[in-house]
Image: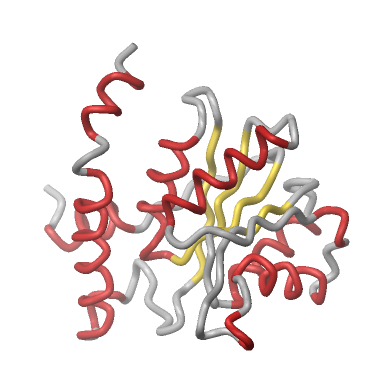
Length: 190
């Protein structure tokens, strides 16, 4: 039988085996390790395109949009400008997913699979929000980076900060998706 600790960890931290995909998605953040990981995947040939998303963030210089800051980091890590499409308006994870999906549709890009680069504790909510914004035949893969406090699936439970981060994320998932459940029933049971 799985321990409660293992169940919490498995629920919050989602990481999948990776495959080659059409794009790499980066949900908005001011953590540079997301861009570094996305650049590594790009250079390893996992995808020809990276789509960072995220609006203005007062933790960044001049309240810069996260997507543009992430784009700058990607370029500094050798990703060509032509391989990056930034979505600079998202204010939350739902916006990251919805605005990315809308941009792909508007630009008529042929994208049917993606790797989501996420902070470990944010991975389940990222995956769920992107799944709500994209068609059910879209394939998602998830790769993780540690958060700014270096919380991982192996150590989050060892500090008060890690425990607070993970438990807060579980609450956010509940808040995010409580209203979505009826729509899930319609969309995914058909």
